[in-house]
Image (cartoon, rainbow, N blue to C red; front, side, top):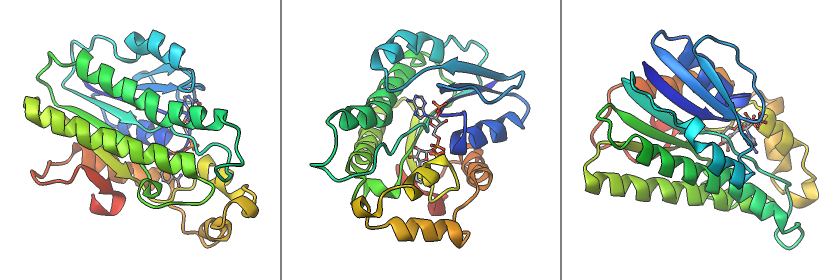
Length: 242
Ligand SMILES: NC(=O)c1ccc[n+]([C@@H]2O[C@H](COP(=O)([O-])OP(=O)(O)OC[C@H]3O[C@@H](n4cnc5c(N)ncnc54)[C@H](OP(=O)(O)O)[C@@H]3O)[C@@H](O)[C@H]2O)c1
């Protein structure tokens, strides 16, 4: 069985990834999010609030069960939040905790536990961290989100370097998926333009039909994940690189 553990599988890109994978026989998906939205005989839902770090710690053993019949195991850290859009200096301090807990601390704990729980296995193991172009460019109003995605990319490149040194064969990648028609984009379009100078640009993406559908992005990602691995593939990727 090819196992996929996907955070944020209840909507948007994560749900499309889970459904694309479940269309293939011989796959099983463990979805981690607060809500359940998929019913399928090979889908297991693990309810979890990734902003509640104590709950994450207490439920790690359920997210990463013993997978004795695994032929491959893939963790996709997909769940993320932009949080309240506003400038640094004009935010509640809790905002930074919330965004970093969901976007960095929980994914780091999941990566750490995945690598440890499945270290004894010789089957292909992959971690895919969903990033954003915002990791590499400042977007005003999104400071916590930009910083959190930059941190996730640094976790990715460092952990891959470590796995290379250990010679484990584990593949760890960061992928920016481009702009996708999801609830996250609705949240962005609802922002006050006074705290977000790119408001018109993101509204135009929507009105001019420039947002990709979650299904088309998921299909491309799954094809790439399951395709042949090039030896000199970069660790930090954009959808166009796949
Ligand atoms: N959409 C874009 O244009 C775009 C662009 C670049 C990068 N990305 C990245 O793509 C990924 C997917 O984004 P999306 O647009 O699909 O987002 P979305 O539509 O807002 O969906 C987010 C998912 O994350 C889960 N989630 C949010 N908060 C959570 C929490 N506290 N605990 C557990 N799960 C939580 C949600 O599930 P529950 O609500 O059920 O918990 C949901 O399934 C993210 O990493 C995002 O940064 C998106």
